[in-house]
Amino acid sequence: MTSTALAAEPLPTALETETADPADRAVGPSFFRLRPPAPIRLLTATWDRTHNPPRATSGHVAIEYPVTSGIVVSRNLYAVTDEMRDALMDSDLTGFAFGALAVTRSHHLVGDTSARTPSLHTLVLTGRACRSDIAPWRCDSLALSRRAARFFWKHDPALLAFTTSLDVIA
Image 1 (cartoon, rainbow, N blue to C red):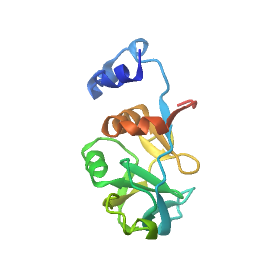
Image 2 (cartoon, rainbow, N blue to C red):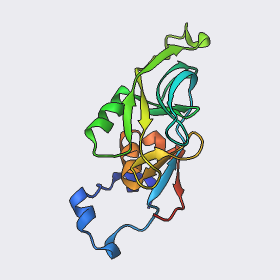
Image 3 (cartoon, rainbow, N blue to C red):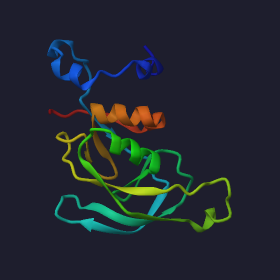
């Protein structure tokens, strides 16, 4: 079975997932690590230091390269595009909120008309790894539940290339 065929299979509903017999559940990893691309440079940020590691709640970034995915990262500040933010808000995933983010273009992109400047929003991570659907995992990585990983792959198939499985005991 190819990865293309796997992505085309319909996802089970929440009711099917909760009522399914454990022996019938899909065999595979329960958690995934996502290392989003980093086409932005962090200029300033406001940090919530009550968490370890501290979590960015808002900031200012410079776009260094064209943003081609729905989620990007720079030094533990995660940013999402308008489309990804709207999809996340409509989902029932846990472990995140949104904050303000100022965006400027780097000096070498100022004259480049082909590189658009997307509207970005800070993805404030409020969850704990392997307890919430989305949470920080080490440096510039996210720990995703199987539901969250499928959500991101569905909304931005390019993120599959930035995802690996986590070998953790839930």
